[in-house]
Amino acid sequence: MIKIGVTGDFFEMEKEIRLLKEMSEFSLTGIYHYDTKLLKEFSANHDLPCFFSSGSFIGSCDAIDIAGNNGNETRFYAEILKSSKHLIVDFPDISLMHRLGHLIKLASEAKVIMQVRNPYCFNPVYRACLPRINNPAVIELQMEIKDGSELENQAILSIDLIRDMVRSNTHKVNASGISVAGKKVDYLTARIEFDNGSIANLTIHQLSDSTSLTVKIYQQGNFILINFPEKDCYIKKIPSSLFPRSNADDYEQILPEINHSNPGKEELKQFRNAIDQKFSTGIDIERALQSIDIYREIVEKINRTTFHPLQN
Image 1 (spheres, rainbow, N blue to C red):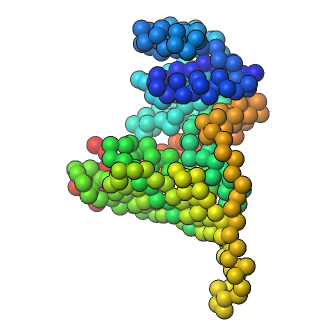
Image 2: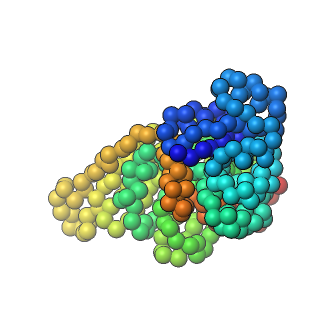
Image 3: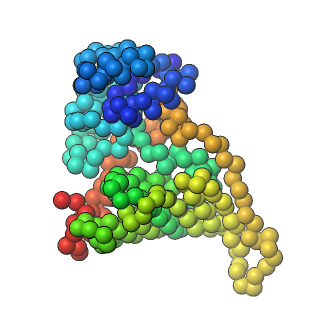
């Protein structure tokens, strides 16, 4: 059993604590937060020990779950890694990109796991289809997010999801963006080409009052559609020769068996497996940096061609 402590944003901490309490793989040692007054109240409400210094908190456990963000994360990350503790975190902010190389080095030297969250990679319908995704030729990802949501964060998560399917280095990136409803880019589209020949077309906009994420995957022999919010997916066989059309069996539709498990819980299980195997089985900090770097390139290309930059 892995002794784990939780810190971060109180709202996100609450969700993680609820999951961890249901998992026999982990033993919750306690919680930490720099706001000691709120920490005491939170600790009493959840019947958990609380720590008032980062050092005592880090020393109490084998692994640390940082839920959400609160303050200068990279300094705290470094303190944890230098203490040879495993770490699971949200995707780092792009503004911290220049410090991530140092964290990669620390994690490698300490021989610990630093896993980065991406809930899309653990969505039940995506996990059901993943074994069928094999050398995709074209991926079309379309996302709508509510106005006021964090476009940057969702774009990076989407890029990382695409890279999870393609598993190849990037060859070329083209991107464009426009401002429809305000003074900032709220509609972006990008074409990402990979060394293995795969192409991904990414479209994200903030012009909706709802959230959606649909991925279409075209590959030899079949077409896969995944609707993430609706938890719906199917795989359709593509005839080897469309003309002349053969019989209807060539268009057989397959409905993968979906295990409707909690994505957060599955992500924590993978974190546990990575610790046990002493090898990253999820999104490590190096892969996260590569996904952030692709987004940075998209930002640079958009900002060269618009009066409304994607980032200040």
